[in-house]
Structures are given as structure tokens and as C-alpha cells.
Amino acid sequence: MRFLQVTFALLISGLTLWTEFDPVKESTIFTFEGNSFTFWILCTLTVIFAIINIRQFFSSKKVISFIPLLLCVTSISCVIWHQKKIEKLDNSLTKFTAYTYDIGNDGGLILDFKVNGHLKAEKRDHWTVTYYWGEYSQSHDTLNLSIPFNFKISRQALLTKDSLYFINDSTKFFVYRQ
Figure 1 (tube, rainbow, N blue to C red):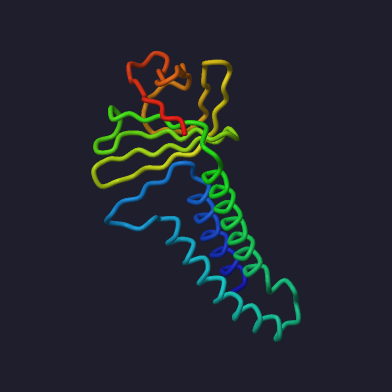
Figure 2: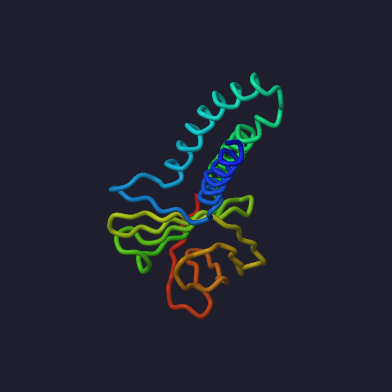
């Protein structure tokens, strides 16, 4: 019974952590974010394991009974820590924002360059918004991006006063400075 609990805890925990640490997340008006679904299953499983593992501990007096519960609690802690970290990075001061309507269908692509080197991108397509998280570095007027886009675009860009040009690409981004 304990082997099955540990296996199930590892499976759900792994799936939840994999979806949480994915740097590309998609949100639509028809579905909810997949990460929250696995996270709530993990929370429910944690409560169930707490009840089962406490009963097992009182009957066997072995601390090993709490392994499935500890796996779930550790995973929940990691997810909450990562969400708070991303929230803090996303809420940091913006250095400048670059946007274009040439990528994406309805709202285009918005690149939010933060002062701490954090980069958040948002691509809008008809009913879907895709979020990307990564980093960038700047050397004079050249930007080097390290962000996992699911479309082809150069990883180097030239920054001017009011525009951003990607090397080997004709897409022009307009720059907005706060």
C-alpha cells in the first residue's frame, strides 16, 4: 500500500512541478490554466495522504509512513516558492517595453524588459494568450535574449531610441519607455 502511495505522490508531484517550471504557459478563454488543475489535485492528494499516513503511523509506529505526505508537501512548497519568485520578477520595474503586431494574430507580441534582466513576453492569438519567461543581457545597443519562444526569431536584437530590430529578421518592434 505504501509503495502505491509513494508512486502516486511522485507521479502527481512530478507532473505538477513539470507544468509549474515550464517557461511557456498558455491560457485560453475556454480552458483554465493546466498548472492549477494539477496543483489542486496535488493539494487534495496531500489531505488524503495526511489522513491515511497518520492512521498508518498510529498502527505501525514507523515514521516512514509519512513519506508520501512529505513528497506532496515538498512539491506544494516548491510550486508556491516558484510562483512567488515569478510574481516578484514580473512586478519588478520595467526598463522598456517592445511590441509588434506582426507576430500573433490579435494583439501581437509584447516584450517586457525588466531592470533586473528578467524578460516577460506575451503573444496574443485569437482566443489564446501565451506567456514566456526568460532573461536578457544588454551590451551597448545589442540585446541578447535567452527565452524559449515556440516560434522562430533571432536571439539578438539591436535597440535604438524608439525601435528594436532583431538580427536576420525583418520584424520591427516599437519601443515604449516608462
